[in-house]
Length: 111
Image 1 (cartoon, rainbow, N blue to C red):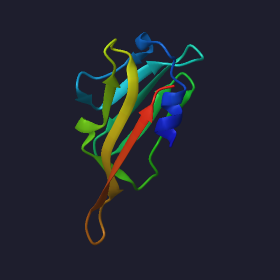
Image 2: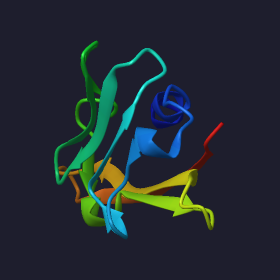
Image 3: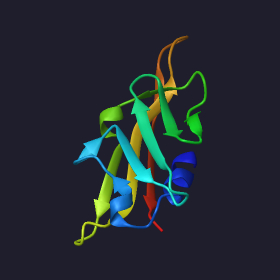
């Protein structure tokens, strides 16, 4: 739910979101407090929230992420205003008896 909380802190103007063209590994946006936040998926490593307030890991230690190339997509209306931010990736653990990954999907409607 940290991804959702970050998106809810975004400003409400179309210009506040900096979305990838198509699907990408990161999204950034201006926040309601006049800061800027970056949400980035680092292949095999982590998901991070980076802002003036600090850098925060959004995945637990020991959790690996993959398919970061399809991490984020912005759904826009006909006026090109961002209406929804979709997150999609695989999270899991590696080692031991083998890799185990699960698909994580979250669709956040912009307020």
